[in-house]
Image (tube, rainbow, N blue to C red):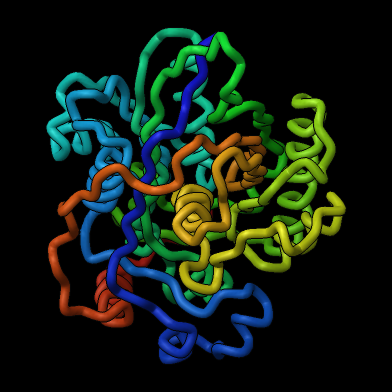
Length: 370
């Protein structure tokens, strides 16, 4: 059977940086407190809509693959902070790219959305429904953040990662190992969905006087920690068994970067060496759907991933969705071309952007909890 090779990759991180010290100017926290509990030092805050971040990441992924927008059959956009639901935001990305041949799909499984999108595209290519796809994980979660809530305000940031997948026929001479997504396990603890919930996002809030754009977060950290480790451990064990390999056969683990303690607990449960972990949480925090894609891209950029490497990517998110994927990287680890498309410039710092968002939300206080 043909496989879906990852031949292009690109990321887009907005320039606005929000440090732990910046957060300490408006909530009761400190750099030491945040880093010791999460591993985070800073995160990015976007001055543009999420479709703009995704557009730049996709343009870079296409250039990396040596392709043009005309080559794209499908755009699958994983996020929970879409510009709009009707029309879908993937159609805006099609418009920005001028990818008029591409079908468009939005997908929301919260923090796992980018990786679920990879699984969907992989399946559609392998079955022959399409021959190529742009897969995106992107968020501008800052616009939907309750910046007065320390439990969540310290954790999240904005960004985008994209992959170009294309159909490759099996090599009859067996001289080339199949690459791309080789095995996956997807699941959800629906009975615990309430422990990570954002009130204010969804149609059910329209009839109770909830101001558009304002949110209140329910975030039960200890229970989320336990569920996250359990879900990702289960997924990892399943994909390792599906592929018939040993944990030692994995070259690198690129986990969802939600909390350093969660990553370390998962590695311990799976008896995986810390040296095999790729971690970039210090720079970006949790970018929700963009987190795992951006980490995977940076692992390639930093030469932590080599040609032919077997990569384990576990993730979890609200819902509580979880996933684990085993990916064989292809022969190329450097871009064919580079894109000159970039975000429009901004002179505002991350703290200035957040203060603007928080001031606007303060004018529109949400009603009492449901």
